[in-house]
Image 1 (tube, rainbow, N blue to C red):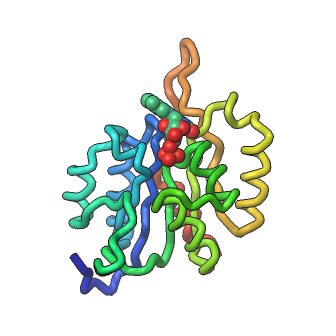
Image 2: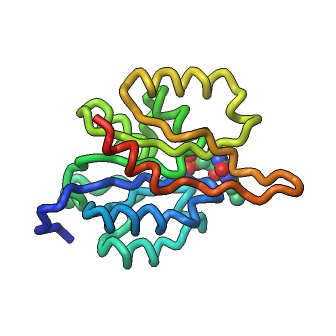
Length: 177
Ligand SMILES: Cc1cc2nc3c(=O)[nH]c(=O)nc-3n(C[C@H](O)[C@H](O)[C@H](O)COP(=O)(O)O)c2cc1C
C-alpha cells in the first residue's frame, strides 16, 4: 500500500514492554496532529504485546517487523520523524551499540544517521536502568541528538496507582527544533 498523502510520515517503533498494549493512543494522537503513521514493531513485540490488527486498521498499513525481500517495494515512505514508544532496555542498548539485528533497530540506526528527528519514551525498570551499559547508551544516543522523554519504570508501587505513560509527549518532543 502506498500513500498519496501530502502529510508528513511518522514511524512509530514499538518494543516489547508491557505498556505497548496502549500504543494505539500514540497512533491516534499522531493522526489527530495530521501525521501519516506507519508502525514498526520488534519481533518480540509482535508476540502479543499489542493488538497488531487494531493498529493496522488504524493506520491502513501492515505493521512491519521483518525486512522486506530485495524484490519487494518499500512498504513505507521514508520517515519525516520517528517515535520509539515504548523503548525497551534491550532495543536502546542495541541501538546505541549499532547492532541492527531487527528491522526496528536497523531503522533507528539509519534514521539517526540521516538526521531524522527521533523521540524516545523509555519503559525500563529501575534495576535495569542501573546497569552501566544502559547509562552509557543514553549518553551516546543523546549525543546523537535523540530526544528522550522522562524515565518510566513500568512498575507499580504498593498502595500507589500506576503512573500514566505519556504517549503524547513523543509528539511534543518532535516539535522541538
Ligand atoms: C510481560 C512482559 C513485560 C515486559 N516489559 C518490559 C519493559 O517494560 N521494559 C523492558 O525493557 N523490557 C520488558 N520486558 C522484557 C523484553 O520483552 C525483552 O527484553 C525483549 O527481549 C525485548 O525485545 P525488544 O527490545 O526487541 O522489543 C518485558 C517482558 C515481558 C514478558
